[in-house]
Image (tube, rainbow, N blue to C red; front, side, top):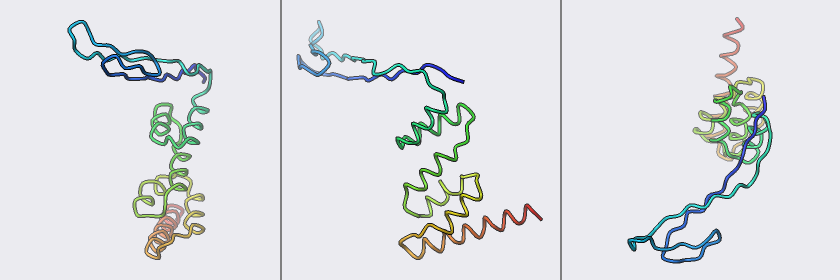
Length: 141
């Protein structure tokens, strides 16, 4: 799968004959303020959805990366893993990022190696890891 993607930049201008980086803004015929949009093509590239997905993750554009993964049926684990690594250990980070990673080995490694600053967060992380182990053992039995 590959495709062509383009990136546009938009400059919204409002005003009464003000000069902007992309042109001049003037009043309309009726004297009302007129709004102009200037568009500029920044790039035109051929790439794969996977490459663009990886770029979104690397640039920390997590919302876009998740939409891209959903649209193309890709695993969202790289996004959730990056979000987890970027965030401090909190109840929110555990439930919204770590719990959504499908790789049990990666999740358990994080539970064992990540050291939060607060003891309460350490307790939550360890409890989450124990619960995950119990789930895995329950499935194997």
